Length: 547
Image (cartoon, rainbow, N blue to C red; front, side, top):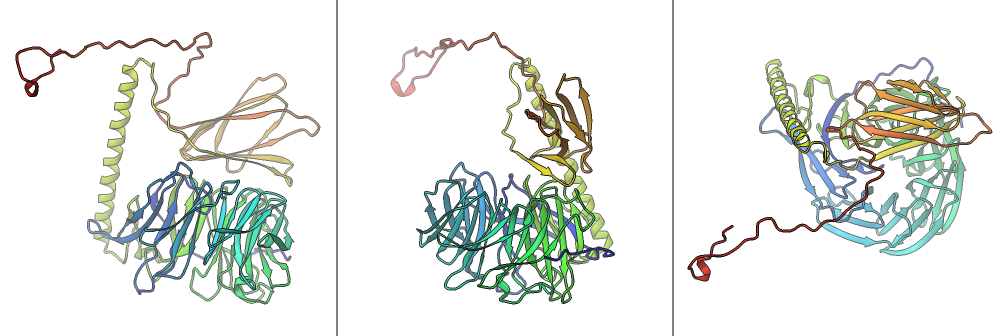
């Protein structure tokens, strides 16, 4: 594979960010845009499956209360199970498409109006992490096991050599074949229970997607559906081509060759689209360090050029492209780990709202300066009202905690933690990434063997070290509001030990957990304090309770 060089290239695509809505925490691949409606002038809808087990479909409509557009929920399915939705896929043509989502080992499907059309208990041994649907065929993969179901009956089974991170389909005769992105640095083409071909790549494959159009300069022939984009844990983005006789490698974007060593996280999602509607190909990349990238392939034989980059400071778990707010301009729609759904629009800034908030999305057209100022005033008033309401609720919660004399703290909701421990071989160190769905307060790092704590470019925390004998004890306190913290640690080869990280979120109120080591639970019988009684001269229907 030839490396794609970006020397002398400048970013030339101007995209405007708009926050659309906030949902619960999301897993990888749980946000998709429904196909373009057949009726002209209609916008695409956004389908989201969150960790509560609920599927929601949203769309943008013209607001009756303010200028511009607002988010409207089309439908929401109830949380039928305690399992989080781990994958969401689409199947079918525009107007008759179906939405399929997996939660645990259960696969459900519904139409665009929310009516359930499929409920399939797969009985697989692992929770489903990756899924593709083509007609009556469901391709599902857990951590190590791949299954193929035709008309809800198992027709294929494969145990992979290493962890399966993602999956897509390629057109092949007599039926589509699955391409598995595996942790052992391989892309495998699988049909039924047989591995047809495999391709070795330069890193653990973490994301894979089929090209919807042929990139110019791919340097390979064949049908457009035979070209597959992939991403790796060490930040590579590349192209593989399946021509029916094998899987061949194409170009590769290497962060080291791009002069970005240590600055590009692992790839969590990748997609190909014609964002600019120029007939070329744009490659959309979402990384685990929060980077959203758009690469462009224009001329024949040209290397991919980086035309847009933005850091969201939290993992990008899904990315797609379509017209969600303006039929004349496509947008890059991304979903983050904490549940933020936002878009980057290619529309001119004069045609978008100058501010956005949950429930208030981009504008539908140009507005006079007076209308924009009036809209800003309304948004500012709404924000002030929400802040005042939040302060009242905090004060009420604090008074209740104080009245209980600290005996009972605030109810602590479960906070989902996402962690990653990876070797950065080029820098001879390990990278520990910690991410919460809520802002981080700090991290306590404890090791029983000597390690060296290194500076990370994206780390804005203050480090405090304490004597710990032969080990290390250090506290990282976040200076700014962030959901993600990255630590870099260098170890000494030949010595082994245990490294622990204790994470606490920035939530209130906080309560001190006293170490009551000599206490034991003691049950007591609760007698009624005020037994009810009946007295007086009356019939039954006139009876009254009296203390």
